[in-house]
Amino acid sequence: MRHCLLCLAALFPPAFFAQWTGQPSSPLPLSTVSSAQTLLVSIPDGDGGWYAFWRDARNENRGEVWGQRLTATGEYLWEPEGRLVFAVPGRSLRDFHVDGNT
Image 1 (cartoon, rainbow, N blue to C red):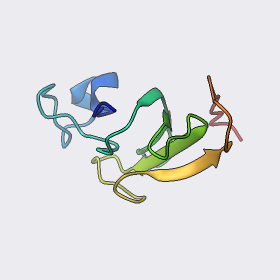
Image 2: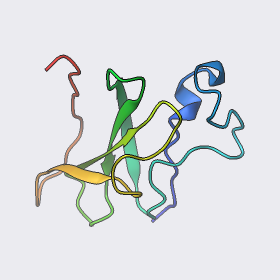
Image 3: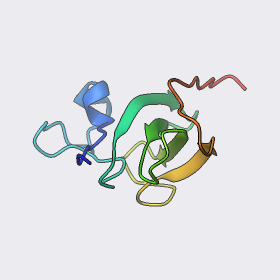
Image 4: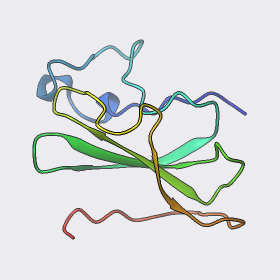
């Protein structure tokens, strides 16, 4: 498995998050678990922070969506390696949608 860092800071101009690193060589990892992590989706949380969700194969299951909530300054509000938010055991998840208006 490859080690993949998902980086929220690379998706938004660094000026918006002065406390976050703007250096590609030192990104803010949402998870450092050694697994295939793909399909990063992020939405604002309404308080200046962000929710980030991604497909993760850390449990040998391609049907899991993990997430992280971050403050406006880049601090984790959930577990350091993310939180399991959706799972379809035994199934492969090709895509998912996050609606911030619900």
